[in-house]
Image (cartoon, rainbow, N blue to C red; front, side):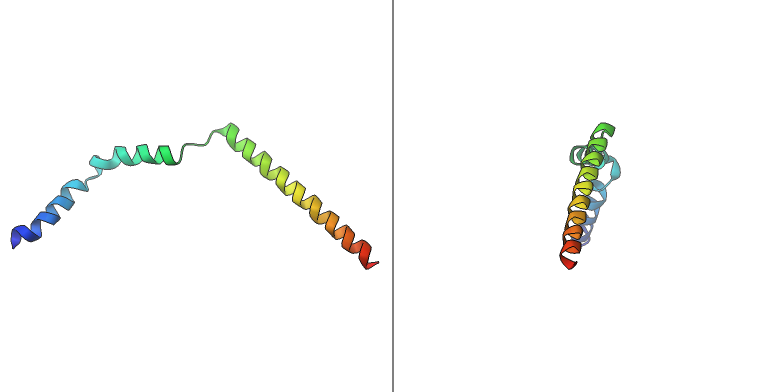
Length: 71
């Protein structure tokens, strides 16, 4: 009975040591979430800014139309 209960605990202890899977975790993290390049981040920020400006222009146009109809 002691072997039956100690075997899973021992296996869990042996295979869950950080040194066994630390390299694997770091490698997978870099594959899934690569470090962002500054140039890519600037392009994304520019695109977001353009979208916000476009949406703001559309809202202003819609408000002007509503204001024109109300008069």
